[in-house]
Amino acid sequence: MPNPTALLASDLKGKTAIVTGGATGIGRAIAGSLAAHGVRIVLADLNLDAAKKAAAELSPDALAFGLDVSKRAEVERSFALIEKTVSNYDILIANAGVSTMNRAIDITDEEWDFNFAVNIKGVFLTNQAAVRYFLKTERKGVIVNTASLAAKVGAPLLAHYSASKFAVLGWTQSLAREVAPQGIRVNAVCPGFVKTSMQDREVAWEAQLRGITPEQVIKEYVGQTPLGRLETPEDIAGLATFLCSDAARFMTGQGINVTGGVYMG
Image 1 (cartoon, rainbow, N blue to C red):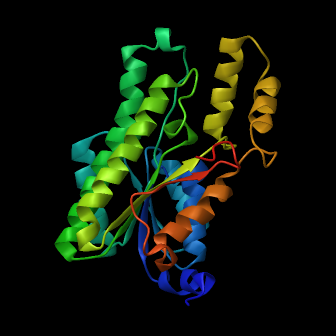
Image 2 (image 1 turned 90 degrees about the vertical axis):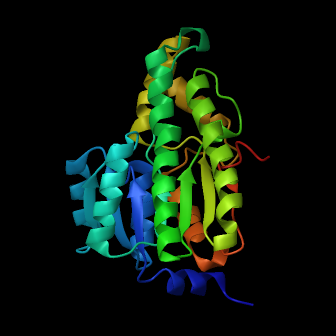
Image 3 (image 1 turned 135 degrees about the horizontal axis):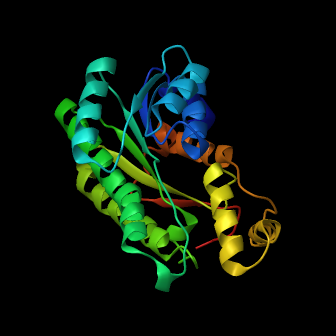
C-alpha cells in the first residue's frame, strides 16, 4: 500500500498551482505548504503589491498577478496570461473570499452582492477557466475551493456570507460530478474560526453588533472549539496540500471540515 507521506513528497514536485487570494491568510499558508512540496506558485490577488511581496518570500520562481475574481473579463485575461507565462498549470486553489457582518434584517443589497460576487461568482469564474484549460490540454487537474464552517451551519450575523459559502459546496459537488470522467478532481475545505485579518474585522463587527467586547467574542469562538484554540491558516494548508496530491486521488466532490471539532457532521 502506498505511503501517503511519500506520495506528498513526490507527486507534487514540479507542478504549478494558481492560488487566488494568495497574498495573505489562508491562501498564503496554502501557497507556502505547496511550495514546500516543490510546487511552483502563482499568486493571484486583488492586492498586487501584497502578492508580489508574498511571491518573493515564497521562492525565486513564484509569480504574482493582480486579479479581481468577480469580473469575468479579468479572470479570462489573467488566466490566459498565466498560461502563456508558466506554460502549464496543474492545480487551482480558489481561495479568494470576503465577508461583511450584519443582522439578517439589516443586510443591504450591496453587502449581499459583494459577498456573492467574490465568494461564489469568483469560485465559479476561476473554476470554469481552470477546467476549460484542463480539458483543452487533457490534464487531470485538481481544484480546491475554500468554503467555510458557515457552509455547513448557518451563522448568525453572517446570513449572506453563509449563503454564499453554501453555494460554494453546491457548485463544488456539481462540477466534480461533471468532470470526474476526465480525471479532474474538485474538492472544498471548510475552515472554522481562523485567526486572520478577516477574523480580526469580524470580531470587531460582532462585538459592536452584540454589545460585548472583542475578547468575549474570541472566548466564545474558543469555547465552541473542542480542540480548545483558534484555528491557524496552517491548519488548513496541510489539508489543501493533501487534496492536491495523489494521496487523495480517489476523493472528489467533498467539503471537508477542518474546524477543530466545531462541526462534526
